[in-house]
Length: 465
Ligand code: GUN
Ligand code: FE
Image (cartoon, rainbow, N blue to C red; front, top):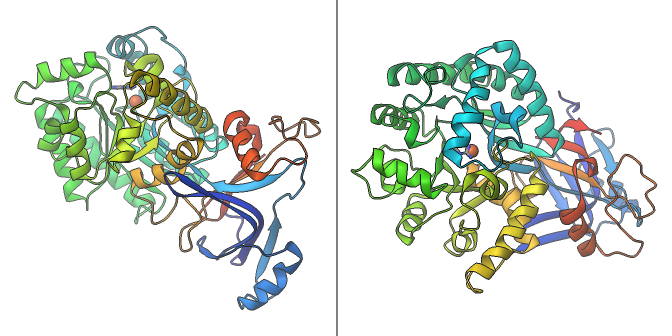
């Protein structure tokens, strides 16, 4: 998948990235240099395009050692670069069931739509077909890092890891653990068997990517309702014994789910204490939803440095969290938050759609809280989709923005004007004379995958349209 030839790649044009939750930086006439190892080695601002070669001489990068790409400077159809999107919560086997089961509560939706669908992944050919389509679809949306739940099948989950590795997407992938309260046709035979398959999957990933530089196994108890104490304990132990592997689960998603959880685990008052007891809350935990949160649980998440995967589309369709997820409060408390498509509970695999829904839901929440939780700005939504997500996944030293030393995970975005002369792009309504701030706003609110023309991971193009 590499298009690099051991030389430096130089990108010239406009760059937009987050530097903190509330602020984006727009760099005009930026010159960003990516080394042969895919890392950003220089990022100069205000270099006129005609001076690119002179600037490279000044950096001691010699002719023949570099290739220059100029991002479109067309005032009518402007282009720019942004960091790749991070999807902190996605179910790869639910790709074909996106949008199904509206109107069902989460536990009904699992029983009637999701479990019968996921059970099909026992068939490896079926798994290969759906996972190819899912990963292509995710990459096309500009998702350079994704956290995937697999099905409970070890072999299908290995196929998922192999496909991601071949296609170049960075991914956290977990065999889904569930040995209780699941239908007989779709359940782990025992806690012991579930743990064995998990360890076998970790070994498989290690054999393909020994340093987990692109694919990292992630411990994935579906949620406490579907796990025995023995299984939860064993999974906490595997995470700890493997140099602190990341962990993902569903957390405080819906009131019905919380009530069922506490009935099954009466020794705990809340989910934070439950998961922490089994060693499943660490600084590498990615907790999906976190809709119904008490101050006590937020304090615990902050103290344990867990991350939140905010899934605003699923929360307003199947999740039952609705407007409850206190994202403003998480940001106030500096709890790590990113965005998840939660596809297929979420009907869309687009992070642009998730950003827009996060924005809409936050407006509703501002009303609900009588102004106390101010709505999210577009800059904050963009942060959640990029740097915020990278923090949740524990890769903020490697990805999430254009800081020097990070890997070049980026998207080349191309906007189309009202004149509509670029038929392959979605028209984002750009008018001559729009400033970059306006272009950014139009991108956030009107663009789709057609505007994402190149996707880079570690400096390699993994998708072009
Ligand atoms: N809780 C347990 N499993 C699931 C799932 O697949 N999707 C969602 N949204 N919540 C869950
Ligand atoms: Fe989910």
